[in-house]
Length: 255
Image (cartoon, rainbow, N blue to C red):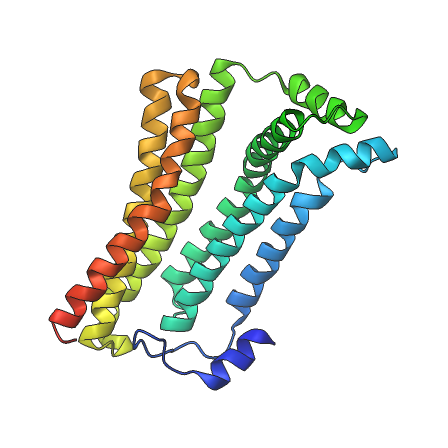
């Protein structure tokens, strides 16, 4: 409903890209359903609390749930924009979209586990520093202790997370490369071709951050997991900077 309202009002993006996929296809609807199912799995995969204390303790993982949902919605937005911009439904796009769905479903549990652990640890530490000594906090700390992640497990977890995200971004790169290959067929203007290449470069930048994170734990081991995770904080810094650079260059080229 929201997408329909949006496309009825706008047929060209703010940067001048003409929308070629104004009507949703079965391919997009299937992927939307998988995204919805993935977000649902973030909730239903958790054990239902049997006591009020356990209910309070479950709230400590809420930060992790927020992070997971934000990441999934970001990927959904990228995927949605691709079909909105290009409207492609060729065999290559269908095959890549199938791989995208597979990776998304395979990726959801490592994603939930990592962010639930980190989110719980952050919130529990904050509550303890504020003087909280409730039973719920003790349960949360007990659950963290039960996980008992050692150095090798942290290394493996960071690598799993990085590889999953890397492959998802790689699929988005390949989808855009296919769109760029069909530029003449899609009747892309010079400006639209430039924007398409910008998308590709930005996904490659995201992939490079994933590779950096993986390399950190490969070379320095699980004890460097904090630094490997911190590598992802480069994304909200580098991506907007590169995007602004490409926009300025586009204006200079008068596209």
